[in-house]
Length: 426
Image (cartoon, rainbow, N blue to C red; front, top):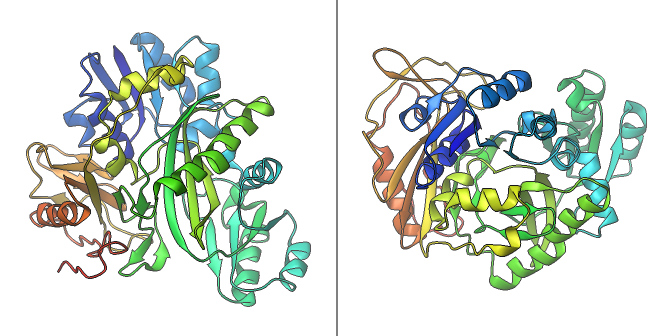
């Protein structure tokens, strides 16, 4: 089969790496890809939001299946356009993807389907939002309704901070159209958990639960990022908690979308806060998470292509998905200054020539020149290690990243600290 993967980050490198292991895959294209992906697939210079170009490429190159990595093309309706053109694609329709592209839509779905979540109100004008803030307990979470590249969620400790955040979105258009509507949400304190699931509109098969580290600083401090690292399986997710998440969160969301005429085909991502032993949904995404994919897919034993085809053909109930009895830890290497301004084009040295059985370096923000592989983003690389325990995987990941160098390289030294709090890597 010929496969086209859309995207250029660590998530897409992981997808390409995993798909390349399938004996049924003859050729993989990636648009636009990165330097690491280019070692496994043929990269093509088409932007992820160029739906016309992507569709034309799939037709011209007789692509058998397209797999969408990032949220932007899904929110623009790439799955709808491909299906109209009789092209097979893995990913939800534009309407189903609103579970990620519109936080107010997701909140309405959760309320309607009795999915546990934080109390919230939605506003599209400034004065009513400010008036409502006067009555709220602090802290509070201010969310841009639309897609804001992971930067549209602000936890406000004081009323003044909340007023400034709301004003920056509704009045100053800080996030453009994405912030033209805001969701003001009750702050929930607990421990976060990520559960991704394959869904074909009727059947839901959860993946191994993971935890990521969103904050830039040690001990989960500082600004939010796209993710500084992750580990799986998360010990927090007991079998009983996983059962509850499946029955109280994942199935109701999929059934609820089908009920409103938007069946969900693809990967449903649930970001969950565990408070007093109970799950509350913080957010839904309509695709694989990043960096959670870098620790979950390496633990997948079943052929990923078999699962994706079962979703596309609405026969997921006929498939058994098997996971390795191992643990995985991913540590993300970033550019200096991230998640703010950072420099690109810096040479990277010390990269392994090829992945080993226990360590894989997934590229996120990289590009290749004639002489070297260069940095090309805020999150540059994700070093993932597999082992029998989280502790062993953590030790291997940090040992593997030590030789990899680029100017301004930064990483957190405490990935997986929630379960290994007595371990410090220097």
